[in-house]
Length: 263
Length: 275
Image 1: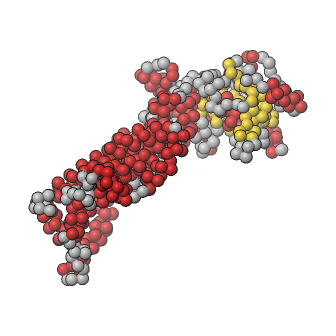
Image 2 (image 1 turned 45 degrees about the vertical axis):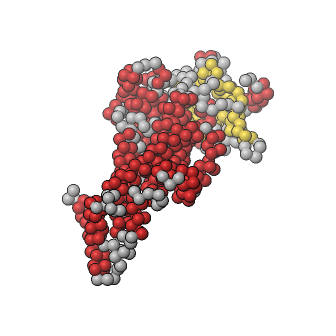
Image 3 (image 1 turned 90 degrees about the vertical axis):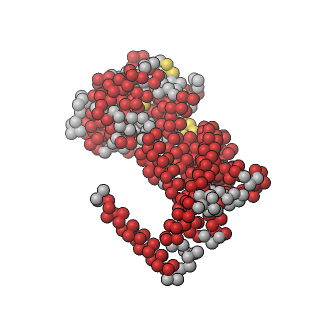
């Protein structure tokens, strides 16, 4: 612990200096507070948000909870569809070749560009938001599951064949476990996409959720609230990602050489 | 299955350029490779001949090495014996039964360790007992015995990524032995190891071979390695892959690299390889 302290000290000191300079810059009129809200304002904004709420009555915690539920619904739904479908597509070369252009195309379409169309389909309610998040997560997850199942080291398959494994048993005992690290990597990437989509998805038809909070703050020139929203999304994303990494360490202790994929 | 044109062509080839004495004794024909050829369809519509008219018999408990340059088809031939690839001409029999796939008494050790990364050393070896009908406890017990045989009982609970290259290949050998194979097929198993580990594992392999009495077919780039280990060395030549000459290594074991006869054989093989 003592040894690590000096390593984290310099960036902390740098950050502190930056924040103090920022604060002073606003106090002495060099920076406009609605363009660069200082720390003191962000702090008081946070107190306001967690007591009175913004808009009045909707606290920061209820915004957070709303967003979290939407992201998780879309995310879990996308995973539940993408994993079995990806396993099937990845198992048959024909299916992979047939669907590859579609998967690449759909994954490349910026999810939020679908917003107008999805509103036409599902209205401006909950379903639209969950659908958009799900859409973003789904294609990222699907392409990773397909790749994981499809590109299993052929020497492992050969080895398994020398022990008399074939067909379903080969698939269950060798192909699936070999694909798991890639599937986990896909799950982590998809989560990132989910949080990227949420702000846009909450722009319309709601006053609840962190995305709505950020947009609403803009209307009232409350830039410090935008920053609070950003920070909370960042913290949640970081926490869930760390949770997934921990889960992977627990479930796949053998895949320790995948640190590069992990980020 | 019997392609008479191919057989006749190969018989003619044999009479023109005999590479070794042929035996008809079934005892000495534990593995019989009869006029085996392998051609791939190339993209241009022509075909590439990887192996052509390979005739060889290997006796039970014999240690035979395939030596040759890259592209001479030695790994392909090993894979055909393993049942992992099909011959396009000819046939291979093991103890009189034609090879139709893996799992007919062939254990394989690959160049790269092909251990399952999600299984520990002992579970990788136990994987080899899957089809043995033993229950889980017995499988693990037998796997531990094999790990002890290769000197790795202490590393039983390690995952492949936690082991050195030499340890990984030891586990690979133990896993192949789990099938209790009559034949151990090894495709450059020590090729990726450092010199010291390689020599260590060569000694280990000879010890296991002598204790367990297996027939071993061993692919290697190294003439030295082949001379240290084998009863016979089969030299293959490329374009198309074929047997060029078979050498009997009439040296008592344990062998020494400094023996004059060892070096004479080395020179002889090297000459044949470079002409």
